[in-house]
Every structure is written in C-alpha cells, then in structure tokens.
Image (cartoon, rainbow, N blue to C red; front, side, top):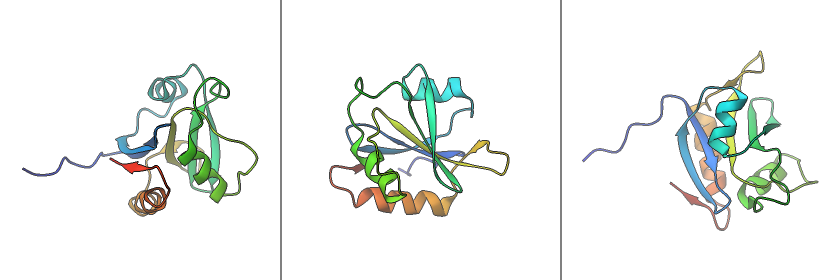
Length: 122
C-alpha cells in the first residue's frame, strides 16, 4: 500500500492539541480560511517575508492557547502575545496573496515543530 499523495497546495494546520497536519490549502479567501479554522473571523500574522500564520481573531479567552503556534511565532520575534485556537501556516506572494508553502519551507517547519514538546506530526 502506497502513502497518500502529498497535497497539491500544501499548508500546515496546527491544532491546540499540538497536532500538526499537512493539508491542502483552501481557497485563499477569508471565508474559506475561517471555515477551516472554525471561527467567525480569521486574522493573519506575517511571520516572515514569505510566510503567514492565520489565526482565530476572536479566539483570545475563548479558545485554548495554541502552544506550538505561539512558540513558533516567538521564534520569529512575536513575543508579546499567545495565540489561541487552531493556526494555519501558508506562504504569500509579491501581491500579498496567500499561496502554498514551498517544499523547503514545509520541510523546515515540520522539523522545527517536531522538536517542540507536545507536538505530533500527522
């Protein structure tokens, strides 16, 4: 039995339980991302010049802290807050549009997240 095919448009979903899954990036609009994150309004944190983290804009105080997403954001200098609820990691292009993660970025993120306590790669 062969392994499942990799998503054509890879992105990473990080749950509050520490599960990290490679998923197929939904349509890059706020409604699709909000549905994926199971929230009413998604917001974006620009972690690097090529990578965004989408989060539940109303998750603070409602959703549990997403420890892996918070730890990852801190590695990129976002040290002043915790992030709540599921998080979606994706790339973005020169026009600021959400795009899939590159294979190199995906591999680097998976290695980084795998080294964090309480994180399980799926």
